[in-house]
Image (cartoon, rainbow, N blue to C red):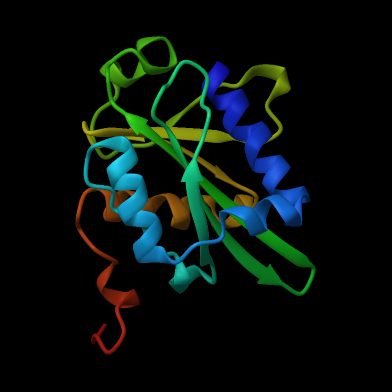
Length: 168
């Protein structure tokens, strides 16, 4: 619950603080390389552009109880403002979130109950190298975003219909 609350609070903080978002802005490849170095395992960052989200940046984070964690941020501009996606990741050590990672099957999202302090629904999954916590401002986008994230972290690439130049 503590990690879900942290993820929700950090997501809200980045959503409301443009200066903080500006401090983490970095190019996609540079972020992937830095996060891979920090986490000690290859990081696959999802491409969410087919849903209108642009990669905004990534940085080390301070997930409670996790000495190595990262936060990746995506932004979508809409006529009514915008939406953010936050993806937190940390090494899978089978003790994260009260042992929940040990019970998770690879490639599936699980709700991560953050309790009353959690302003957003938080999902978690693992690829056995890393545990991921996903926060999405848009309820409508949550399922398609989570599908693209799973495909990326499992090394499957984007769905065929979203690849440029591909036939449907």
